[in-house]
Amino acid sequence: MARTRASLAWLLVLPAASFLLQGCSPDSGTAAAQGGPSAVPVTAIEARLTSVPAEILAIGQTEGLHEVEVRARVGGILERRLYREGEPVQAGQPLFQIERAPYEIALAQAQAELAQQQARLEQARREARRLKELLARQAISQREYDDAVSAEALALANVKAAEARVRDAELKLSYTTVRAPVAGITDRALLSEGALVTGSDVLLTRIYKSDPIRVRFSLTTSEAAQVPGGQLTAQSVQRVELIRADGSVYPLPGRLDFSARQIDPQLGTLQLRAEFPNAEAQLLPGEFVRVRLQVGTRDNVFLIPQVAVLQSQQGLFVYVIDAAGKAQMRHVRAGAWHGPNWIVYDGLQAGDQVIVDNLLRIRPGTLVEPRPPETATAAADPGQA
Image 1: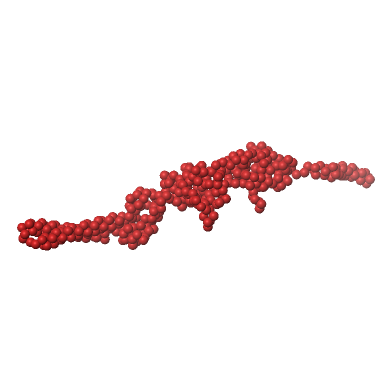
Image 2: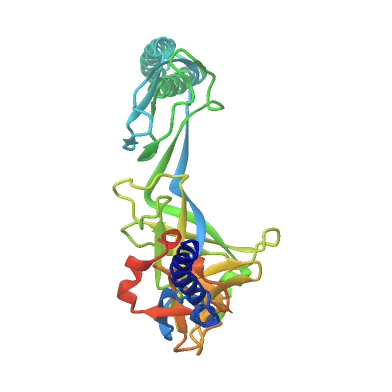
């Protein structure tokens, strides 16, 4: 009986042992080794030579066509501000009101003195006419008549001087209303109501004439050397665009209206200025913007998507697919951006397959599986999206 039970146990153990031995056979391990790592799916585009506009980007700052300082011509207490800060004003529009009373009194005094001098002139004229008749009858001497004529001339001069003082008093009274010397955009008021204005040495505000508006910027010598012919002039610049801080392009093109004739010896830059229409005051003086100059075309360059161009300690590089279907690093020399692409000058050859996605999973020598470009979005690595 015991021998029968042992036989049954061996019959149950042998199939299981046979199954385990088959799973651990040398042939099974060899098959797994032969499978190797799977290829990384990637999207590749063909590098093609093309032509693009030759563009130069520079950082600039806007400034008004005119920046006028508004100062009072007379002193006194600043009673009122007559404009809203930061809004456009017209030439001659009242901006501030200085107290009028002292100047009204001065005008009244000048007018009274004028009336007094006019009365004296009339008296001197009557005296001269009377003495002229007496001289004709030889009732007085010539000297007496000459004195009367001189007194009339002196009285006339006094009247003219009094008239000048009246005009001066009227002018000073008019200066108590400080008006905008030019049309433009106002700055904030630098004095508040109740402040004492001591005269023209006190700045009240500024007015910026911002239509057209100007942008000052500069280029390094290497940037200026990119211009075909090496001369950056209004004739060599085909188009001037302004890019605002939010990345939007100003809808109206400008023009280059100033180019320095020498390099700044301290900064090593070429000073430039562009002018843009600004009738609706979309641009304000003092904005930091970018200026894009189109200075011709660049031939025989490559346009490579920005996501495909990576940075290392040695510079910019891309991954291309070699003949064995593996990713290889290729260092490139790139210029500025052109839309969503880098402009690549050197490092690629026409026909190279440039990898544009799944870049975080790739290293030099990684086996890759190229796919059509239209499937790039669906299979892109999340870190590259």
